[in-house]
Length: 263
Length: 183
Image (cartoon, rainbow over all chains, first blue to last red; front, side, top):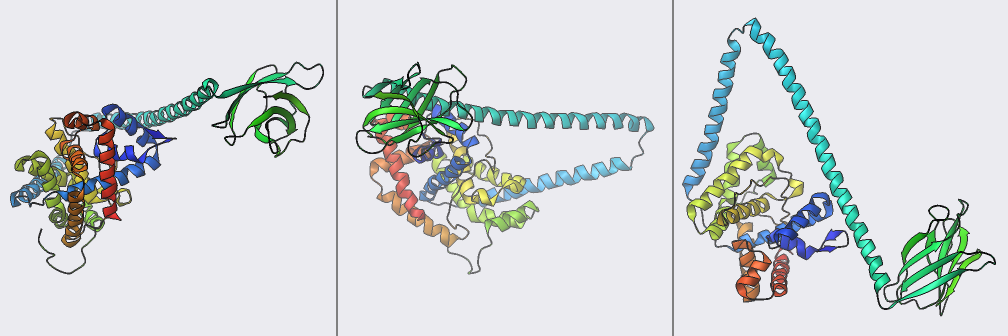
C-alpha cells in the first residue's frame, strides 16, 4: 500500500472514501497519524471525495430543524445562566470556618492530581509518538533487509570472491551483485584503518572507468562487515576491488588495492 | 436551490466562525442557511429518511456552536468537513454503528472550492452532476456504493461479481474524473 515511506495517493483516496478493508484502513490511519505529508494529502483526497455530496439532488430541511437547533442552544445558555446565578447566590452565603479549612486542602489535592494526570497524559502521548517512530524505523529496516534478501536469492545475481592482493595477507571478501537492479551486497573481514582513511569498493566495468560502490570502515577489529549499496543498473562488471582511500572517499581509485576478484 | 438574494459579497466561513466562537447566534444562523441543504440532502440520500437526516444536521451544527474555536481554517474547509462528517455519521447509522463525533481539526478536509454563496454552490453542483452523469455505469455504481452505502472495495466486488482490481480501478478512475471538476 505504501510508496516508499508514504501511502500511495490512490490508496489515500480509497481511504478517504472508506473503501479500504479494515486492516488496510488501520495501517493507513497509523501512518497518517505520524506523517504530516500524508495527512495533508489525505485532507486533499477527502476534499476530492467530498465532491460526491454535490451530486445529490438538493433538498431543504424542514424549518423546524433550525428552530430546534436554536432552542437547544438557548436551553444550554439558560442552564449556564442558572448555574452562574446559583453560584453567585452560594457565594453570598457566609461559609463556615470548618468548610474553608476543608476546602483549601481538597482544592490543593485536586490541583495536584490534575497536574499529575496532565503530566502523565503528556508523557504517554510522547511515548506513543516514539513508539510510532520506532515502528516506522523497523518497517524501513525490514524493507531494506528484504531488498538485500532479494538480491542474495535472485537467480541472476552473481557471486565474486575477493582475495588479498598483498603477499602474506589473508584478507577476503565476497560480493553478491545483481546487474539488473544495480544492488550489491558485500561482506569482508579487513583490519581497522586510521581515522583519516576508508576502504572503498569499486566495480571495474568491462568498458570504462571504475564505479564507486561506496566507502566503509570495519566496525571493530576482526569483525566481519556487511555493507550494501546501489550503483547504476546494467553496469557489466569485469572485476570488483577494494582500495584504501582518504576519508570520505574519492571519485576514482588512487590508493593501494587490498582486495581484488574477477567475475 | 434559489438564486442569491442580494449581490453583496458573502462573509467568509472563517469570519462567521470567529463570530460563532464569540457566541454570535446570527453567524451560526448564516452558516446554517448556507450549508444545511447540502448536509441534509447528503444524509438523506444515504439514510433515505428525513428525520434521521435532520437529526444529523442538527447535531453537526450544534457541534459547530460548541467547538467552533477548534476549527483551523488552514487545515481545511468548513463545507468539506460538514459533508465528510455528515456522510460518516449517516453511514454509521446505516450500519448501526455508534457514530463517534468528528473532531474538527483531526478530520481536515481540503476542499478547494468557493461555496460561500448559493450561486457558487449551484455552479459546483452543476459541474459535479455533469461529471457523474458522464461516468461509465460501472464507475458510477462503484463510487456510489462506496460513498453512499459505505461499502469497502471487497464488498463492492462481492456485490457486483466483478474482480477486486476492476473495482479499485473504477473507483480511482471516477475520483480522477471528479478531481478535474476542481481544476
